[in-house]
Length: 124
Image (cartoon, rainbow, N blue to C red):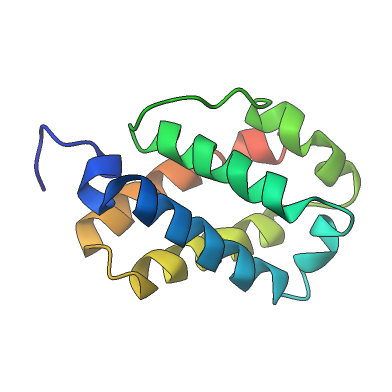
């Protein structure tokens, strides 16, 4: 892994993040345990927010101006979002990255970052 390159650069930049987000949400919306959380949500807007968020998290140019993870997921926790849902989303993220043939060491780094957000996402 290149030490001087961000994860964002290593996975292929903006195009790769957009492709990953599209595949990721397609997977989530096909998951009967997760799809209900997205009823009534503008998926175009959600995908754009997720692209901006992941770009920032992966070390790319940051223009994310959305809510922090606790605030952004508080209403979902109130609707029953729990650790099983978090783990399912993480599984879809990992499967998406593997489908896109992201190198294993980058998948591992990304999943470690994702795991570190669990307490905030679940408002624990």
